[in-house]
Image (cartoon, rainbow, N blue to C red; front, side, top):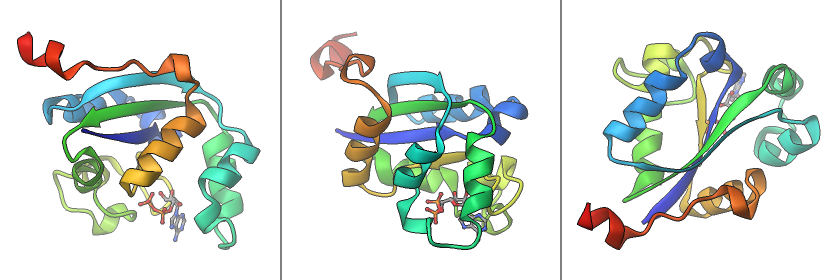
Length: 147
Ligand code: ADP
């Protein structure tokens, strides 16, 4: 069982696509183990986006992501990291196939609906970074299979 971290970006909330996107994850069989609305501070964004912080678009990305509250989620499931990245599609929605989340709802290379962890290690790190321990709810696989 893997875990991945999702951010529903401001455009997703503005356009009221949160339910549709979360619904796709649930229909794929993934379990929600954490969910909340929060404001991302520039300091948190500089850590989360450290791998692009040196690039020219970063100030605009920081402004966009901190401009209004986002919704963050932690999902659990088999191979959830790679499968959610596949469902999301590539960073630039223009290159994303119809049927992918970014292909269906994305606006631009920056305004692209959602973030999802790109590795199993980052899934664990990012959930830790954005959620407090009491905000993650363990799913007992035995209880799940009995229901
Ligand atoms: P992904 O979100 O697909 O993992 P990256 O980690 O490369 O992509 O980039 C993080 C975020 O930075 C993207 O989701 C997007 O919002 C923004 N971004 C990436 N590349 C560009 C770009 N060329 N121009 C503007 N924004 C970008």
